Length: 311
Image (cartoon, rainbow, N blue to C red):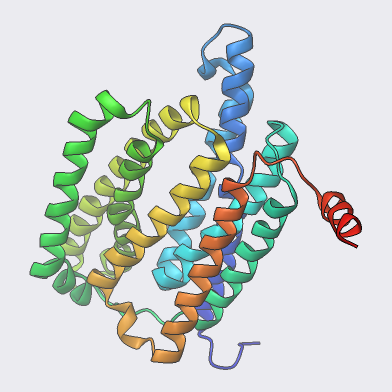
C-alpha cells in the first residue's frame, strides 16, 4: 500500500539508499584489513581475498547507489550515506581494532538521527522526468561553468598536488574522490532517464542512446578514478577518519552539483530547508564525535567515577 504523500519511486529510492549505505560501510574496512593481512605476508593486497571481498562490496554499493539515484532525488539519497559511517566504525572496531569510545557511540547515534531528519524533510519527487528536461539542464551555462571549474580543480589535484602532498595530507585524496561525485551522481540519474528513452522506440531514441553512452563513460571513468585514490588513501590513513571526512565532503559537493543541475531545492520549503540543515548539522557533529575523540581512552565508567569524586 502506498504511503500518503510519498511517491512509490521515492520509497523505492529510500530503501535502496539505506541498503547501499550499509553496504558502503564495509568496503573501506575490508580493503584496509586486506592490506594489513597482505603487508604481514609481504605480498600485494591484490592477492588477498578480504581485499577483494571489500572491492566486490564497493561495486555492489555503487550499483545500489545508481539504482537509488535513479529512483529518488539526490538530496534524499546522498545524505543517507551517513548510515554507513556508524556501521563502518563498529566494523572497524571489530576487524581493525580501531577504538570506538562512548563519544564515538554517541556520534553513531547522532549520525543515524540526523539521517532520519534529512529523510523526513528532503523532497520526495524528482524534478527531471524526461530526456528533454535532462538535455536542457545539462546544457545550462551555469552547470557547464561549474563542471569546467571542477575539472580544473581535479587536474590541479591529480597532476600537481597529489604527487607532492597526497601521502601527507588526507584531504588531497578525499578532495579528488569528492569532486568526482559531481560527475558520478548526475551521470547515475541521467543514465536512468536516457535508458528509458533509448529503449522506448521513439524518434528521439537514437539521440538518447548517444547520451546514455556518454553518461555511462563518464560514470565508469569517475568510479575507476575514485577507486584508485580511495585505495591510495586507505594505504596511508585511518579508515574511519577517511570514511567520515569523505562522507561530509562528498555529500556537500553532490548536493551542490545536483542543486545546480536538477534544481531539486526549488521544491523545498523554508521549514524543510531548515530541517535538512539541522539534519545535516547533526550528522556532521556525529561524524566529528566519532573521529576527533576516537583516541581518547575513557568510558561511561569514567564519568561515573568523576561524578563520585565531585560528590
